Length: 540
Image (cartoon, rainbow, N blue to C red; front, side, top):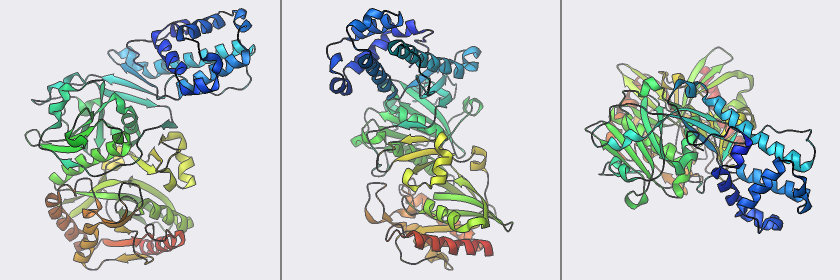
């Protein structure tokens, strides 16, 4: 809903609008109406709107030809039908008044739609109800768009017309659905800069300026992928105006291009402008948010590798123990290896020995060598996790902040905020780095004493796939990271070598934890492994 083109100030204006007629047309053509309410089979949108106006005018003759209960049921069904859509209000901020009242404008629209529904329902019912649900009647989310001025390189001129998201508001818990629910394959390089295709694109485009770690990313997405665009708000920090104005991005993504080579996703390094550019085609399968997230991370990781930093596919937490010690632990491994499950098991067995556990990064981070030091940083301020992987405590504590994707399906996901961008980009000391081994029958943790043996395990990236991607059975992935290292192994290997040298020189615990997720899925075995890890951490 573009509020710059149309803003409704009253019920009569809303009911008389072409947008309302368009909605009624959609409802009258819906399968639900045709099977549930045969009384409405022959009614037109114009007839329906006239009927609504007569009810609002207190015309009692309406009920001479139609049963009140049938009419009320139809109104309820139409309201539910409307609310089943993803509804986003878009406002372009051209002055301070709009900027300052952006949220109030959207709130007023929701009040109007809610009051309209209640007024007409009360009229048909003949009385007011005594129970109310304060639902988001008009919008699920709202975007305030702004024109930003940044040094557009030659060849990128078509981007000048695309507005940036300046402020985003969602009404959680936000439930959204996509036709696709699984990611397939890996991204590959292309010899053609995707920006050359942008000038010919149709439809509305938006730019989400993201901070992915310390990388500045301009993520351009087509209106067909509004689900993925909104989901970004819970995953990556949005760059502020002062971080965008006059700034060239490190990364750029075009999500939803009409055509790409073989309808696949690719990346390109624009060496002249030092920008990593990605493209994702407009297909049914790319509606799954995993494509958006992982292409963003792939571009970021390639940027990191170019700078001599090592991308880490895993999670990092700061654990505060009751004995006063604090340890930073990094779990490493590909999808389904058992990183998050190991963390939960550690919390379960620790009882009162752990007083706090702070997430530094949930899925992707990096190790940086600087002088005699090595430190870790994150990428995301949120977590994109399987609902099945969440403990009940985590799920309920974060339910009111979450963006839920296909919650009724297998591989259902939720995106929840977990940390701040300041915490993500801070320099974090590393006390322990463990590979999540989901295929061996051993129990506990194992510390590598030989650097080459450790490196071989981490580089091989073995795991038993659990169906979260299109893989199955025992798999190997170079450095357990198909989002950058797999694409550029020659660029990655020297950084791996230098990182392992530094970690072993400094005596950092490098090992593996046996998660059992790929074989017997034994919760008891995983808890025993977590107990062994807890013992090591407390004795370090």
